[in-house]
Image (cartoon, rainbow, N blue to C red; front, side):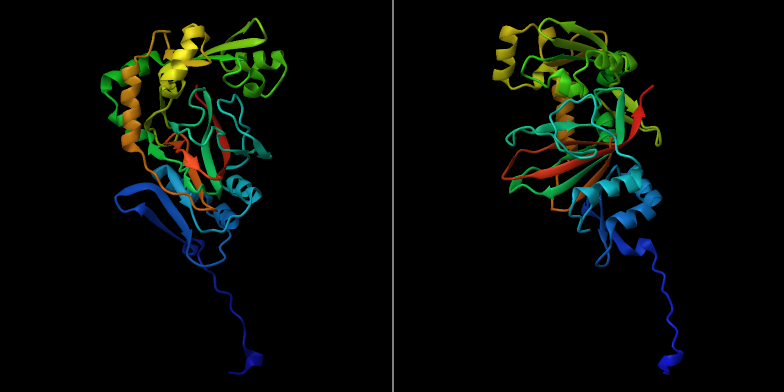
Length: 336
């Protein structure tokens, strides 16, 4: 061959051929795993050019695990989220303690490592929530610390029809008391020290509020128990009644609080939307269904777990050793 007359030809490789997919367990379709098929695939670039395909898989499965892409920084994680979902959103009207890492990337919930976090959908205690939430494993725990997930469609389907109908008709009322040194102060929840800003937020989101003695605040809001996914039309179990209800507390903690506080003064509690009490056995049954639908996998450093926040619930297992998992949320949705 005459090298002087040799002409280089560009070979176009389909971006789809750059990844392979599988399930972690053959009998379990959650999560759907996406991995590079060749070395050097840049997840941010690949994802931004395959946004529609990723969206299709997310709608179908509800949870996508991006593994072995060599993601090494929170900025790469943020760029990935922005490439597939647009601008990230702030963690407003907070329910759990988190630290802002950079921009709109946060640590995962900062509860003590010996505590588990029950399965739930992000901000399902509100009328506003992110449609997408993603978790980035910077460092896996020495032991435990998994982020269990469950299909919210299957949870809904398994709940006793009479219980579902009661919740659908009555909805759920969340009562929160801030400023007692037990739960988050209102300044942290609403991210402001200005009472006028708090009142404006509450009025715009149908939250009833009352200022109490000692700079304390009490809020009450009635929200959905069941929601309809805006794209698929699926009915999903979508609330945090089991997390807010007083029965979720350990016996000794609950007894200590009730010894000094009336039920309406508890840091948080949940009721049926008409103010009547939710039976503890009903929430226990729902918790059992969550457990039966739970899927658990071990984190690997660099993993990104992307969830459709309405289709899949998440939680956290207790752990030992250092653990660092970051969170990003996108695509705000309002239930009207």
